[in-house]
Image 1 (spheres, rainbow, N blue to C red):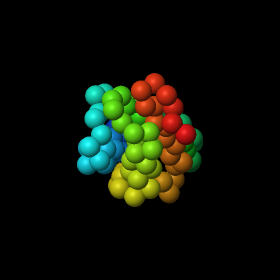
Image 2 (tube, one colour):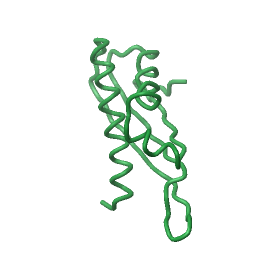
Image 3 (tube, rainbow, N blue to C red):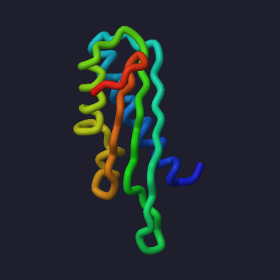
Length: 104
């Protein structure tokens, strides 16, 4: 993997660990958890930093919709050090798909 791919993986991994931890503390039953991440890069001088990054979380199980949405929000707003590091230069978007349904 390239260093830039590793950066995306670190973001997805960091936020995933947060979400699973938060949901387990709330006694939510997670039977499947997957995260996809992709980024759009733009030329800035000789470099090509990320401008937009999207993380999509796929969860299945006996999980409350509000708790799942809130866990993702808490990860990006408060806990994930990787997203806080990237935020000054890239916009991070995320979606939660719970049992096949995208949460608002």
